Image 1 (tube, rainbow, N blue to C red):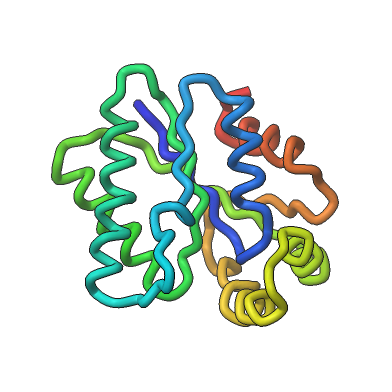
Image 2 (cartoon, one colour):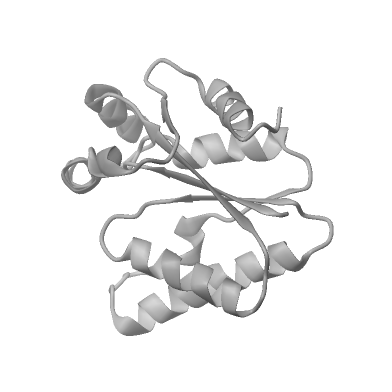
Length: 169
């Protein structure tokens, strides 16, 4: 069965970087960049934009999951705010359309100082980093999905660990 590899974690933890590395290591794989699914300037979080973003994500998942040449879809994402609800709606639509998949969530974590350091290195503004730490750091502590502490790991090693957890190495 095709797999959606859902990479979760706080803002700036390295979800996208790890996902890009995972894409290089995993054959028959596609990568959906959640940031590009909502690349609107300015981004008003209104009902209209939520519908557009949800439709974008759904369409990409549907196209990739129906493609015979693709077995894995990597999706780095955050569940904070209304994002989890949007993601659950996308999964529900896929199931309603009888598109089979297995959801494989993995949470990336690192210590707070490292998380801030990575966000700075990524070029994020101080205000965005502070908001991200407030809204997303520690957010995933109650989830029971497999977790990887990436504090002292390189993205390539994190990708290998994900492959090990999913028994794909």
